[in-house]
Length: 225
Image (cartoon, rainbow, N blue to C red; front, side, top):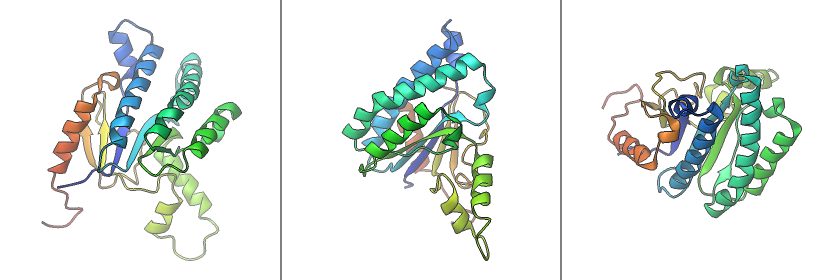
């Protein structure tokens, strides 16, 4: 049976969830943040899951209304501060991916603080993709490799990316069937699960069902059984 050691999730549907509830979009983001807590806690206690990578803020999300972006930055800051005890209690190491240089100095400091305080944890690794886009990630990696002499191999490029680990299972909530510039290199052979459930309604039971289905999936990686 397959082991989903690295799970990646596109957490889509916060705004639509809020609209269906007759609430402002920011309420959807708040509800979505609570789901992150429960999913992270579950994964930290799962015997097979080693990494959980969550698409939190893309390079394209800057195009959203200014007030929504400002709220998301404040929500991220408060989330990280509030989650630090949960990380430590569950032995979770926090590793952000993405180009963090565009965030405020205050937010960068908070991200760095949580990363440093959880560096000793050796259980689940939770990565938040922040100001992340796969094309941007690959481009930045190639620029870092400009000075390398000789052939640039797949292994070398993989080690230069923000996320250096292949994805086993990629889940997108919210009903859309696309990767939206997320972990394109790492998901080359990931099993993809697209579900209609909006992220604030996503539950641990939903994740367990997907993991169980993944375990029975035949993965050939281009070969024959």
